[in-house]
Image (cartoon, rainbow, N blue to C red; front, top):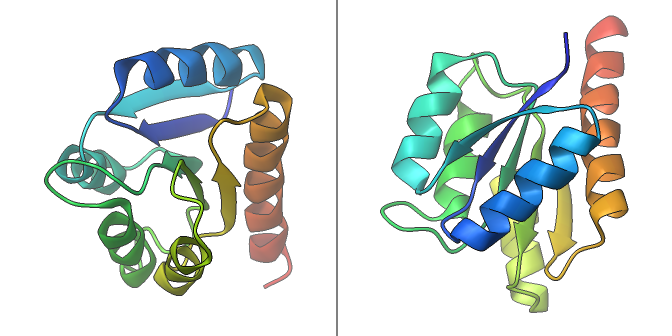
Length: 130
């Protein structure tokens, strides 16, 4: 069974690009188009990682990331922030929210796939070492 990644992104063209690249990288991809839908899907379970934009309708990516990391049922799910917000303050806020990795748009598809794999593997290794 392939690892399942939830993509939370409101731009349809970016969603399609992510679906193609992550799918080619061996992932099953689920999609949410806003922060509230993303959080609902995370709480339903079954995701090995979340790729999350910062600027989202209804609930921003930092809020979603904080909620994921604050909940004992979801706190171990790796969160990869993928955003066009590239100011140092955006990076710092993302880290403060608990993201595991931070990537900037435009992104290299291979780098994204490798980053998601790394985040999932790091999470699995951490669970095995406990």
